[in-house]
Image (tube, rainbow, N blue to C red):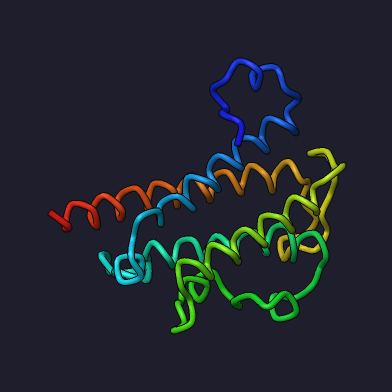
Length: 164
């Protein structure tokens, strides 16, 4: 993964640069599960449905909404994802750190395939809001991932401090 703070990234075209930032945040969110056991990853520390494993599962949903639904116009049911953001945090008994990591990696790969060869000016017409340029979708993804990385940092800190 490229480091957005390295000199060689500073002069990249916007379309390439934004992808580096998105990939960094994807990796940061995924790494929030590193070294945790299944119970810790599912630990509910706030009133909402937010857990570390649930955050990464939600990120799968977000990838599929913006680079699946928006790009293709397929319904969420056709894409095999939750019908709403709230439901995307729900964990099933079969969800594990390994399965969620695998599913997230697959979602990211699909997202990368969708944007391959496109610029920020490319318009996706399948979103419920109407047609949106890829540039807006990428910036929204970055906003979404940054927010959830912050959530994950706090939850992980609480989990690790409870070990002592």
